Length: 150
Image (cartoon, rainbow, N blue to C red):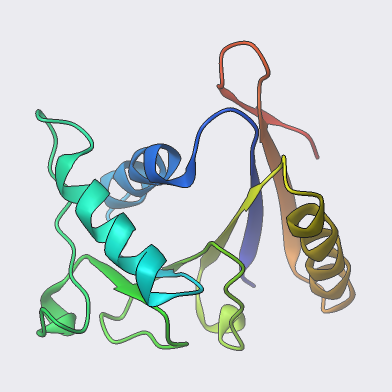
């Protein structure tokens, strides 16, 4: 059964929070598909993953790079898993019909956006009704560290 974790951003933008989550995915030996809602967001994330830390490297690619099967992290706007990933990351309002095919799904949302929070609550209810294992993590207001909520 797929484990679904909601990550509610409070202090950090997606471009800064995502690399740290992806580092953990790769450290676990897994591959990831990162699905976002627009080509503009995909391009911004692609650029930020190359430059977020001068002492770190997150190997990744997108359709313009090709060779998806060789990419540990695949960035996309399509509901696909061309790199045989075990982890799906949904951000920027992206939704997937393939969640059950992954070991883990990370739903990242902007906790300061009322519409994003309301949409996440609807997805939470739908996932719960479907029998998925759920968890909710939120950034601490003072330090920005992740704290488990449920």
